[in-house]
Image (cartoon, rainbow, N blue to C red):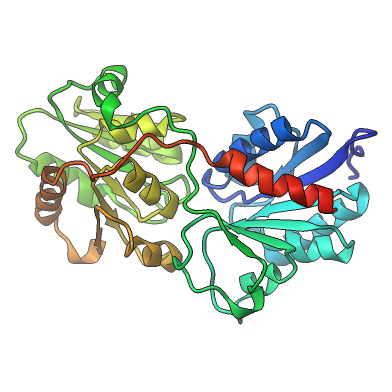
Length: 351
């Protein structure tokens, strides 16, 4: 199926946003909005699939849904992306960790900007595809991962990407009131990310007994469950102190309401908790070594192997992390989307 061409007189931009979970789509939407403010002469269309496509569908942006599963096949994605390039001939291709979009764009000599916050070695296919990027915008601190030699001169380090959060630790009481949590409660939040479901990496059998063992008189657990909502509601229905949310668009509200957070080492959430100063326990399942490698440099995070821990030990660790209090230096996070959009806008000129 062919897609309608870009608006006459406007510069067409295809923005490939990886569809595995919402972790790419959410910041990409902020970046796209900032870009449209800077460049009203741009006609931007998102390209995604699976959970990422569903997140983008909730916005005002046109979306091309590739209809692929979350674990999208590399070669099929490349073929579909190349067809889009041939049909639409965009002035610029932006890809947020959608690696096949880069070689597809270069088949048609389209300029490319790639967004990422991790690197692998030069032999890995991800690095090989990144060689087709004209610019690589690295959304983390320099040194977080070793820069491949073949990308020297292409990489611009922009620091840890910050979404435009509206809550900080100073808003803790307000956040708790809005979530229906007593101000004096001991609050544990569970933020596993939308991809690491209970089927992928089960946490409930460890965490729910640990929560029961916490000796705080007033305690509350908030679990942002995503597609595990029904499963976890059924398991926790008898406990009024456990709140299960399918998805929380104001995730910073849950974060700042927490005394301690539990993650599945999902990198973006881990870094956002660090930025807000929330102590955390990251359960490492060994399924994503990229995230677990970055975890070593995160302040206020303790990594834990689920096979090496009991509910009793986890309960003690949660209490210990919470007793340390908020991390010093945490501030309200201001979105970096405009800074990234400014760099992207220059690439449109270059194209």
